[in-house]
Image (tube, rainbow, N blue to C red; front, top):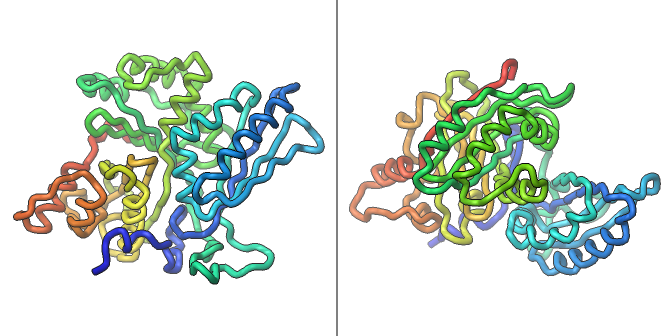
Length: 380
């Protein structure tokens, strides 16, 4: 009998659909590029901090190698490249509290950083598939995106403050969507599930530039200051270090996105929050990604777009549904066809005597997040 873990542990080996603009689950190797701007005079301090970090990273599962390079034109500019067996182990590490502690020594000597992540598509020499393990080493084919970068932030508020927080987050003036000639905010969708807040954004252009642009807007600053007293994790937006740590922990990256060929401008947007069992967040996200990728092949299917966000055991699925969520097949609405998979990978309780569809409908109801606001920018 095949178990759920066996069904989801292998890489996505089918031909990648041209509809998929993002996925971390194809099993190919990952190249991470970190651009670093070091304070003048702090180069030696930075080198020492890097060497300490390098020794620690070497023992992280999935890490293959790394290089540190210094610009020949500007000694303040550095480049760190690392290679990983695949994206999931890197994401598990970079989104962990261990990583937050590891990089702390770098903060006092670094002015700015920018991280870029790439699946390796082709290289000189070497097969695409490892002969011993059978694992894919290189991305099978290039993906076709839609020009949008998807990202989310999540945090929790003090129990009992949910209604106040929802009102504050709903009542704000949208920031100017144009960041610069190359970057534009396209859509912001904000949901709550209990005391958890999830803000999903779609950006055309430079994500980092867009996040910085939003953070500087007076209307956004006012909202952030207003919810500060209700946050479970304290932060001081006037303290760069406090703000950096908060938003590092709040980052909820998109690990998979699929868009069906047939679109419907009237599709309704929903978000579902899945309480993953400890250590099962990545496996759950991969299973959701597999099933949504397969569902997108059905031109008559109700789920037109799906984005899976995952960090540790926080898993959120953002879906655009034709005809509404309640009218959709419960397996498609939930993204999981087997109640046994739900029980194995989440903390949802099953009712043994309930019919399968009734169980799935109940899981959808438990996972469904409350929409606070969903705003599209003009011309998006």
